[in-house]
Image (tube, rainbow, N blue to C red; front, side):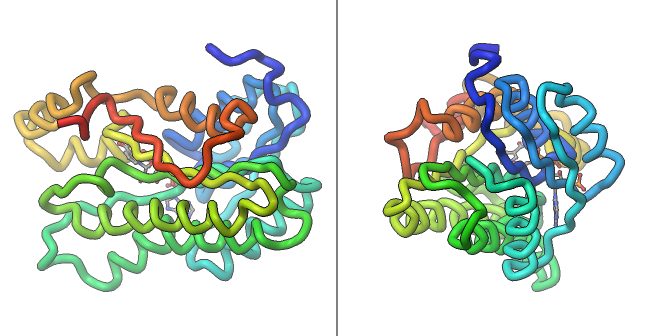
Amino acid sequence: MIFDSKALSGQTFLVTGASSGIGRATAQLLAACGARILAMGRDEARTSESVGSLGTNADHVAIITAFEDADSAAQQVKEAAVTAGGVDGIFHAAGLELILPVKMTKQSSLDKLFAASVNTAFGIARAMAMKDVIRDGGSLVLMSSAAGLRGQAGMTAYSASKAAIDGLSRSLAVELAPRKIRVNSVASGAVETAMHGRLASSLPPAAMQAYEEKHLLGFGRTEDIANAVTFLLSPASRWITGTTMVVDGGFTVR
Ligand SMILES: NC(=O)c1ccc[n+]([C@@H]2O[C@H](COP(=O)([O-])OP(=O)(O)OC[C@H]3O[C@@H](n4cnc5c(N)ncnc54)[C@H](OP(=O)(O)O)[C@@H]3O)[C@@H](O)[C@H]2O)c1
């Protein structure tokens, strides 16, 4: 670990999608830096497993939540944060993939995709504007994707949802700046997680190899994103707001 084990001690962070992949790895790194984690996950067993992996340095909490829309997400996040005495930062990792040609992309799929990612991000933003949720000077990081920056067949809906996340970050950064709350997104390339595994099982090996070759440094690991998110949540990034940090192993460079 490149961070100090006490770098974030005394601080509390809420992480969505903490039951798996990037959310779980980031919760683990923040906890390893001394922070207390409010781990929001949909699956009870896997969220508890995540919390069990955080160690005993702080009073970590598992909060079982399925996100459906902005209003209920605002309520769920507000309740979790206020009960914990307020948070110093939030990482919104929860999200789904959707890989479908546009002619097969129906409203029901769009609703599910946008609910988990964009609508929940709006809910988190609304909660943050409420009293006693996030302390002034706090930080929000929203999980985005290189797919929001580049065109790819079969990715219209996913790409639109991540581009929406980047747009939301920029305007929210302006709206929350008077309280010195920073808002950034992380545009990730392909990282080996359960989501990535589902993609790999739907593509022929040759297509998967070509996809990996587009990443100049190969596919990423969850800790590659966790390191970037931890930096953006920490005071080390105190002068960074309204930006999309690209962490993609060189996927978008050419
Ligand atoms: N892996 C990649 O290559 C990659 C690249 C770019 C961006 N991303 C983004 O990174 C984020 C994390 O993805 P991952 O790769 O770590 O995938 P993952 O392992 O499948 O994790 C996704 C997480 O989101 C949660 N989730 C999904 N829908 C939800 C809902 N409606 N309510 C509450 N929780 C919900 C899942 O809960 P359950 O455990 O209950 O399913 C899980 O915790 C996503 O936003 C994804 O779009 C991933």
